[in-house]
Length: 315
Ligand SMILES: *[C@@H]1O[C@H](CO)[C@@H](O)[C@H](O)[C@H]1NC(C)=O
Ligand SMILES: *[C@@H]1O[C@H](CO)[C@@H](O)[C@H](O)[C@H]1NC(C)=O
Ligand SMILES: *[C@@H]1O[C@H](CO)[C@@H](O)[C@H](O)[C@H]1NC(C)=O
Ligand SMILES: *[C@@H]1O[C@H](CO)[C@@H](O)[C@H](O)[C@H]1NC(C)=O
Ligand SMILES: *[C@@H]1O[C@H](CO)[C@@H](O)[C@H](O)[C@H]1NC(C)=O
Image (cartoon, rainbow, N blue to C red; front, side, top):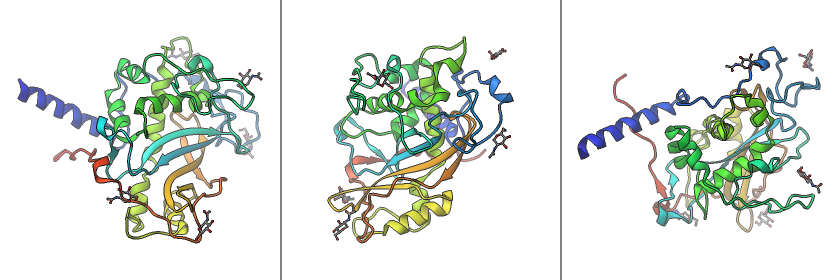
């Protein structure tokens, strides 16, 4: 029995690996909105046409600058609980709607507030964001049968100092509730509760896969190293050479010398769920030191694991 179970688990894993090669599997239960009315809408990239957008379900509005943010970390703080970083990959932070002028909205719908530890705790206008104490977003992913999605998120969407599912909940409630294409009203009369939560996570994974930071840097000879530094320009040039635009590069450390973050800025044609992303230059100045070398540190060996599965031999 144990052998058979092991074999079945391996088959399941292989099909998951397959699902995240160049696309996602057909969902077990539909999570896509009914956006058939978008078919007759004019086509444009978000923020690029002054024509009034009539249907905000069809294009992210007003948050038409969509940022796919990623982290580079060397530890998680929850190693003892098996929360480890993926080998040879950056990790997902989120997918954020900035307004076309660089400002942004956050926590736009308290009826979909699932963040146990809101950050900020209070909105700029003084409204306190109620912390969430209900069941985990993870349970909804399971309810919709998206084991493949949960598996991927557990490998690449990693929190620091708290559980991954808290982080996923935070990202949904802070950002997706301000992204018009995930509005519940866009899902029509057949809407199943939390459908758009699953749909947002799928959209984040799709966007993340468009920006393989580790591979793009490695292709330019930039690897994690605890003995060599790189200049900010080398890092920006490497990413620009593959995306066509300069992302925001974030650094920490006393002198801004430790590479920590990248945010890829985009305009989107169509919805955030299925639309096409176009890279644009960041409007946020880098926090990295321009006169000193930047450290792209190697991950602490006990904080990292291999998450890639063996490719299938013959197909
Ligand atoms: C989607 O909504 C339209 C009305 O906007 C309706 O005519 C159509 O039947 C719906 N499609 C599905 C698959 O529910
Ligand atoms: C904006 O979209 C409208 C409607 O499709 C089109 O007529 C117009 O030419 C577009 N303007 C620009 C600047 O692309
Ligand atoms: C503060 O902003 C939130 C979100 O925009 C809004 O729902 C709320 O009504 C505002 N509160 C006040 C006191 O203006
Ligand atoms: C860069 O490093 C120098 C020290 O060499 C420091 O004076 C400067 O403030 C640093 N810049 C930033 C942005 O931290
Ligand atoms: C590299 O340096 C960082 C920062 O000091 C440290 O956290 C990490 O454990 C080091 N990695 C290795 C493989 O030594």
